[in-house]
Length: 552
Image (cartoon, rainbow, N blue to C red; front, side):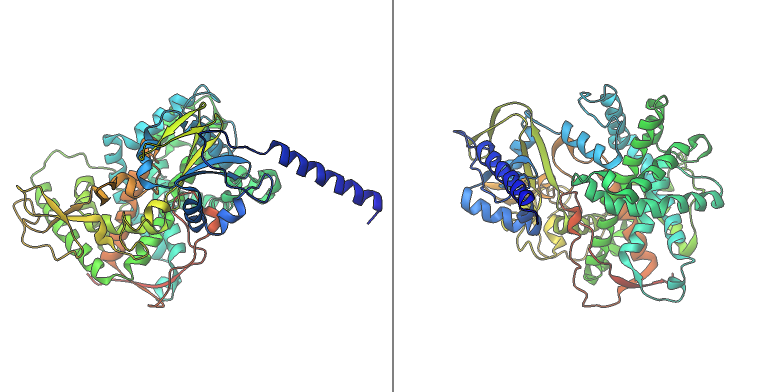
């Protein structure tokens, strides 16, 4: 190497080191302790990425419940005590607006109006209000459930009926299968569909491969890698945006209220409309696909849970059919995609209310979300202020800093969830003694549901979801015991329909198919750490299953 060049490089490195020493953050009185790190700018990102839960637990032992870490240029105040979440949730100086806007910008580019405050786009509040109303409103959710009931049967038929591996009873990847079913279900449930099967298949062929590739690589964008450094990802995203612009919704059946509202709001903003549609498609897949995979994987290890789910399903189905015979003026949803293959159309007897009564499956889904949920719930500090926590301690935080809570700190807490490393769906259920006695007790074993009353539900041993976790002095509510979808008013607005979708898919798998692991002793695959912090962790590798139709 040329001596002059070497000297120049050494000089630059010394200057960078000097700047780092002179301008690194220094703790002020009242602020959380600062965790020292080795690398400038990168900070503790490498240590955190290797074993995030272990890293934060070790720091908690050394520095206490609250400490400051530099992560990729951000000063992040980590709160590690689960009982402090409700205090973070209610603190008005901690804002979600910029975090959400930046996230959407990385995923779909700009311009867009995913902007709650309207600081970046004045149309943001209108767009976000329309999204929230369409996803959380009771009427809208009921309509989405009706669509999901029909479309899920179609998605199963498309994924399996002509697949040679299914026909020949050869192994199929469970994550691959979950991806196909979730993609069809979410695409048609939200965006509607063509009446023509040929047009539907042509559209899916244009979308599917690009979307799956883009979704897998989008983790790099969220980690702030410029899309200009990823030419194949950029090309895939551009093709997807072009497809979104070319959709003619007037020629489609079953378009959701969410998409209708976006089209109305964005009718004069084609570029923003395409990005809003793409973020809806992306977010509808992000957690649903891995959540379905993990729920099925865990259930395949729990045959007793499967038997109890099917027993509960049969009781709820009998009760629902009995009630529907008495109704005469129901609005029947569009059923043009309803598949009668393998008798799957029996799922249409269910509705949103009856699905809520299948509580054992709810508990199984919650337990899977607990084990694989890795949400990093981040808020930006709006102004210099103090944050008070459950202990009464107050911490000074600076404007522009970030607070964070890593959901596994709650999910794997031994007081909140006893034996947290184990899959125990019973931990999410309590047993009601009777209809009149509303007292309930935790159960360690879900016994068979016994004789039923006039509503078709058990008089004794009736189960319901647990509402509190932990012990006196260290309790959290049900909404804060599983934080895969975030916390507070900024929780994922699509979580309700996502859980309904997963629930329906699991019920169809269990009721109409024989599904088993190719290797009964299969261990859970490792997580794909590229998606750390997003929500539900995808598996790094697929798991092979054998699947065949049940003879009804």
